[in-house]
Length: 489
Image (cartoon, rainbow, N blue to C red; front, side, top):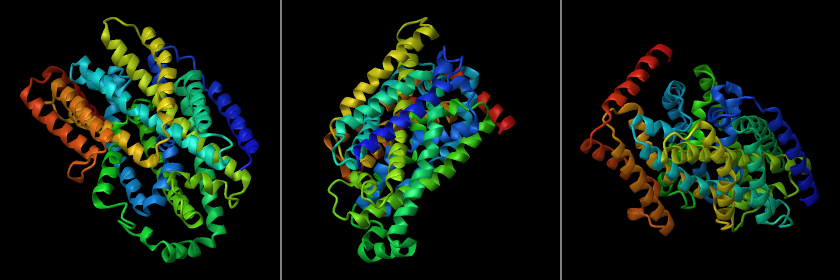
């Protein structure tokens, strides 16, 4: 694809998106609540579009398409498990929203720390989130790097693409905090879903229509229409990929923090329903992209190049290809800037704010803004490793974050849980996952995420039973929720 077209597309996108971000500025961004969670006044439709754009990042049209190219229809099962995992939002979402409004929580780690009367718990959860989410941000940057490199035949090098995405993410995060991110996300989500669906229709039509499309798959790639197919999706691999993804909406703080933001429970429900509709459409679109690339480019050495090559193949009209490119770039940026805001809020609120008494809201906000570009630079440096198979790397990040899941269940449903249980389960299990991911070890063939969840659960339960719980806070917290859930849900 002509590099000048790509440059013009990015330039036009920047002008429009920055304009939307500036228009989204509100007067209530001068405190932590206003800057990082929109003052808990985000409407349902905007919440749904932003939640979708943040969740479906470069992972989908680059990563999931690449995973489909690599392993076939098993990728669909993998993503369906994630969509099923969104049921956790129905269970935890109202509880997050209710306690967030009552106690003024800004971050999920702050909520855990307060529930267990433990500043150390908040600090540990925040630091573990930083440890695993910075590489996940790098994965999104890498997705943009591969995209621009592939569609321009290396005229825009990988590093330049990563740098472009990093600068845009920092810019959007700083203009108006979460307000600019939410509104640019909404714009980006619409571009993503419309353009990606249009490409599928165009490509399938070029390949002879849906009947011919699936007939060719059945004749030439029959093994890709079954599980384990070519052998990639054996049982343990499928389990290792899907379990962390099932808990994604709870374990990933850039997603769970969104549960504090809607202006009402009704808007929270709208967010969930809107996201599910978006998820179903976008999942099938990404899978079809992978199958399309499989038929057109049967011998790719790097599956993550399936989408870039499809867009630059000549089958997709140039204008539509540019729009889709912008949609993928926007999707990656929406995830990165959400992570930047979440991690900076966690560091400012839960690490900086708890290291010394009496640090004001204004001081925390100032530190949070300073941390944003630092986190972005760390992600940029990590992305330079140019690691392959974005979908698997995304799961690796979630494998580390999954160790916080037992603490979340304990927060809402187990009065006997203790701070010592949280500290041991999160820190020890995170270290275990880190070692397994770094060394590539899979004891007994079991993936790190499953080990992390298993060990974390055991530690949380056993250590909690051996230590004294904060009975007063537990009774107050859970008792309040039980009463409110009966009255409002």
